[in-house]
Length: 337
Ligand SMILES: [Zn+2]
Image (cartoon, rainbow, N blue to C red; front, top):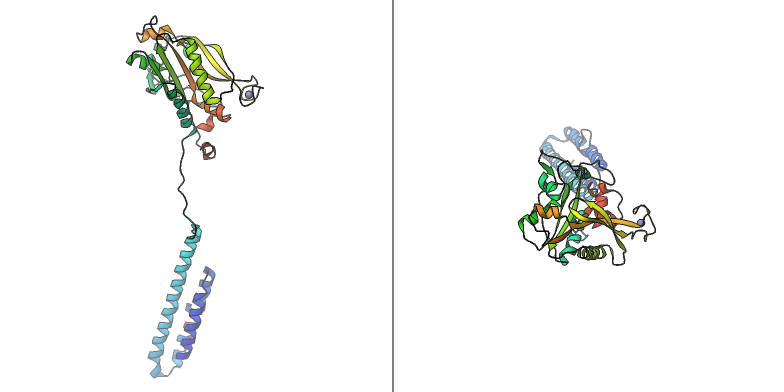
């Protein structure tokens, strides 16, 4: 009996060393530990062992069963550890992975780039509230009540008097109330329009407005500054033109176009086959705006301009849908690293 127990123990040890998968574990359990397994068979034969040898043989059989169970437990634990490692793709011989680093969103990048160009030309950066009063958003900027010009900007009203600002232009009034000229600042920020969301318009976007007020500021100063900006941002070889336009808060007003660099001004979908891209609106500060902030238009003059950030980013990078900038699709965002 003892000899057969020794033999079986050796067999079990060798079998346990081969337990490489779940099927082998189950086969091992059936072969040795199940009710009809080899260990149980030896227990059945105990009745044939001479009486005086029975206690020792029984003890040896119990030890054999315990060993078989311990070997099985160890094999199952090792198997589970292997599977966890494999599932996590752990290869301890590989060098470590760098944690993924984020980057600025393209809208922020565009604000920063534009701001840095104007900073180099001596402009400081100013800020204002996104919830404005009717007075700052419209009235002080020469949009009188019931004036049709108000229809140019579909507005989200919060109360009769409060609204989500439709442009960053109100900051110029706040600055002129607070500081005496000379004032030279840009004010980037979020603006809101009650428009249908489409490829070309959104309810929320960004602008950067600028203002320069001092003695003897002329339209030539405006042109010099904006042409310098456009060449630094879009490239020094571009052509440009100023077209007459209308804004209530500037007089005269203009829009600035640059030659389409996407098609070499030959005409393409982005420039609507005109060869020109509209990049900003601008003009000389209207005397009515000066009057609302008690700046004497006989003594001072100034220019103002406004640039759409999303439009700028889309032109620069050839994007054709403004929604791409707000949907946070990482496949889009990651392209502007
Ligand atoms: Zn074009």
